[in-house]
Image 1: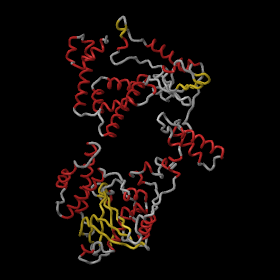
Image 2: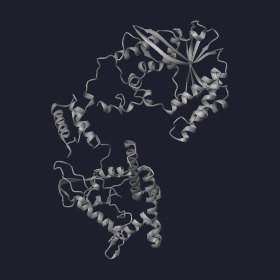
Image 3: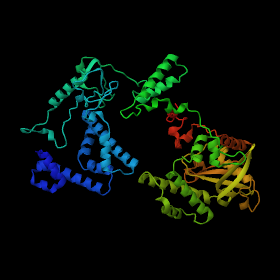
Image 4: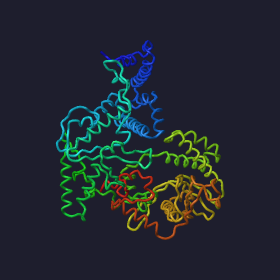
Length: 583
């Protein structure tokens, strides 16, 4: 015969309105649960995801508010609430990953995935055990068993003893032969937890290890009161362990020892033998349990790959851009190779879209297609702004205000006399071939603006919308500006100077995101960084260095400020977080 609570729940799921005939004290909770479950079911039937259904169930109960209050109060109850919140967050993360990984697998598949996860503490199914393996189980399941060494980990106050009430959602476990039993008192729960701790501790034949952690703050994790009942004074261990107590850390240490030239032959041999044992371990389906222990997985031991087909034909010019020249010669040639040649760079970001929009509007003003009026430019900006993808509405609003300030600075710069210079071209494309030693370099690109100064020389302007600016010394040898000036020398702007080859009068960066110093006009005008007409052979040396690295196919990583925005830093051997790929 089903329990009364089960009958109420069945009716709540089928027809919640039928519960009105029952005692409100018992029916109200089941009715709310039934309505909530019906809402989740309708969402799933309409094509909703498991994550969305979980949110409906979570948000539709008083549990979130109750956990928040307990977490804010602190103490043992607060720590338990923190752990419950962590578990809920983990469940939502699992549901989100399942949707992303499968493209929408459905709620039933998600539940099957959760049930298939092998969590020793949650399964009561008997299974074949390995005699030479560590067994992980709950204290309840350890009854009647013994081992030479037993570790009882995490003996924390709030976890052991765990004085929270036991039972299911509807407390069906309280239903007995004589009716509804009273819940266990805190004293009875403590006695039960003490008996369980005794069971766990007495499973050891030779050695027992009990661990706990102690937070410096009083409301943090504290060792359990049950530790004092062992009759042994706990030993405090401070500081970080020599290595994390985990299999990957053990494998990393053994691998490092086997190839350490300073280690003794006996120690290296012992490490290799232990790695061999780990690599030979397999599960019931003959899959390796520790695949990283096998030398075949040690990427750092492989020789660099080589190709019989050259990347570039040495008899043809090496094609480069101004930004590529800077990466190859000054920052990181590997970043250039992975981003430009392999095409593995991250897709365009909202920041790049910001820059593109500002450049287009600046070009429209300079060419006369759009009047030099801030209100008109903002109207044009509104027509395309929503197409840019920002992480949050507040970020979109913030960047739009930054775009307004950048356009205002551009207009102030555009309408101000610049030493008699006059614009002769905007977004001017060029394609020239330069000689750099015994190597020919083909440089292609686009100049944001070309101006003629009173002496008839060509002056190149490059608008920047980034958040950082180079130093004065870096501008003096800025590769991109130097390439523009070299291109002028080679005839890149002859057509806009009536076919006459002009001399180069210099170049400048106009930082539209950044205001000038007070002595130069303040925040309402852009920061301008000028490069004088070229002198010396440093640009030719720069071209030869960059082209040589491309032809020699030697792309070495180099760390620096450019790493902050690199898509490959997590796997780069020049960075601590990426060094694991070769060590």
